[in-house]
Length: 129
Image (tube, rainbow, N blue to C red; front, side):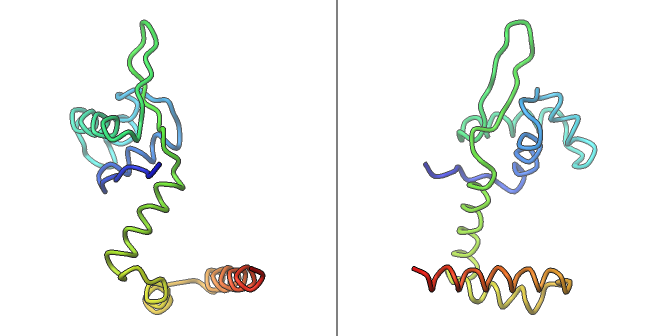
């Protein structure tokens, strides 16, 4: 199943729920409100949208407020978002993306070594198939 399209504004809500869940709407608002300046109603609207998209579910316990929990895996959503970004911005080609980041990103020497290790492993993996 393809992960739902999560908007830029909805990502902080999802990150909060991936970090700790289930949470009530008030708990999500408490976690996000100060950093984002969002009203409780804004967060409740985003929670409703995420439920409608199938990204989160409502858990109801008698006598307690509704709780929200993710039903999609973060890595699956990151992968789908990355593929969408690659298609939109780099016409689906990884090479221009990597070239862009290698030239324009402020990578530390350790990050460069890690990226090189990853690329070397990718070559070995491809060669062994």
